Image (cartoon, rainbow, N blue to C red; front, side, top):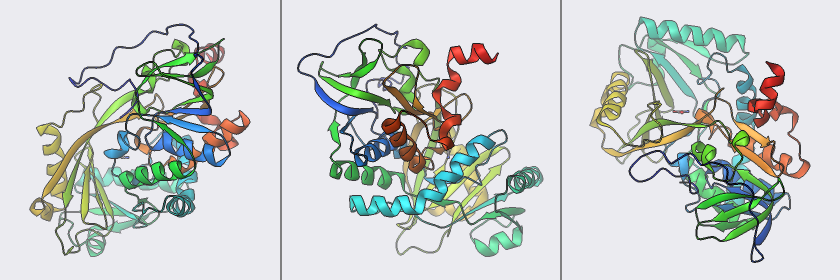
Length: 412
Ligand code: GLY
């Protein structure tokens, strides 16, 4: 859930807000070094890292720890989710994947909570000739990109994962693609933020405050003002909707719907799957993520339907049909949860990180399919940007300025 820009309960898109011009913060305003708008995992990791750097930090969100992480499966799949044309993003994904073990150790220590991080690896399999050809192409792309993955025959895949369908034609074993439980990750981040002294304003954000052409805080629901030296907009797919943000600075982020199912392997847990298994089944992607507590996450649809978060019969059918082809025994399991979430898609599928053309306003949004994976690196990058005013070298390609109208005119 996010500030003010949350779609209405009817599922209609919120009205795009026009900038309201400058506003001022009143005498009763609370002042902080950093105000993070949005308490999903990206906002939380930004706040935690900022507070660790000695900045007084606040997060505004009616329900910190919610957002897309409540739906996400939590695959850390830099290699198996490699897509053509995303080579620049690959570098950032790999940098974040490398940081995960230390990040998790530090977060678990700081929060006193387990995050469900599992170094289990991933197996991507093919069911028919076309899927196999696609996987062969992906393998070649991975190889060209210097990534580690091993081609296995169908029999070798089934030896690793005996529940796989006999029809599996081959697969890619990627031992470096792991998983984490995003709900536990979010909970741990809330706790770590609290222990680090982050203030939570459990309220919607009405609008950004802009004073003398500089972001100066936000007005919360009910009119309360929070003044801040710097504001980070980290509201996921809703980041492009905040009232008060000048039009040319609004991030070009859109919602991409994903429906996800949760099944439960009954106790005592019979070995069902030992690692994440994913496949392209006649053109549609499906993945199965087994947790140690018996939860089996099946995802995900990818739908360009605006702000709609309805769980549909068609979405559930597609996921169960494809998952069943992959692992026929899965239909015996209780279906315990169905949900839809909104990925924050950007024009180049990469995040928007760091300072904007509006002084005092930074972005941490547009993470699309990789929000969970990119959490550690985002925290580090944003803390660096908040302290120094600059992006670190590894994050320079992800500046929001790559979409600014001025930049595009110059490069056209
Ligand atoms: N990264 C998985 C998904 O976006 O569905």
